[in-house]
Image 1: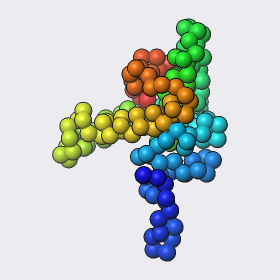
Image 2: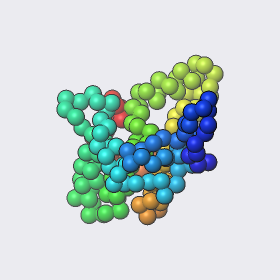
Image 3: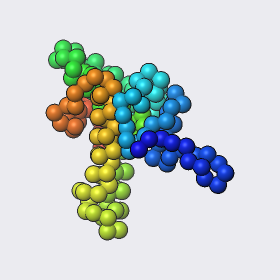
Image 4: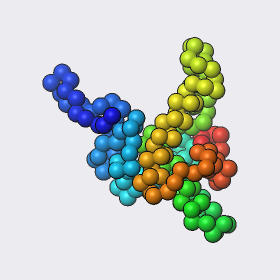
Length: 166
């Protein structure tokens, strides 16, 4: 699927599974490809404008700051640029889908379960994880990085994360 114009009631709209990025290009959420990824004009500025922990901090702390500080810490500790690169990009999908705090995902999963949509561990959590994984794959391809051994490997090194808003 690509992002195409759709005529609707004499107005032109974009496929609803696509979003417009900071650079003005369209990004397909359901069929992301490396060619849609722009680190300079989309990912970096969009992450710099989004707060970690749903903004629940004393001062503004962006997702970009978190990624840069964590990547630097990992590099200083390990001297491995590959690990630093993966950490730098571990939240890059949030440029396209935002930061969905863990408590929100938990609440959505419980609501889904209460409404007969899967069980608490295999409904909305799985859908969100699948969407993140699809976007992450396109991001890694754009960065010329192979997928990491585990898509959750960054969580072990997610400096500054907390259930309060991760």
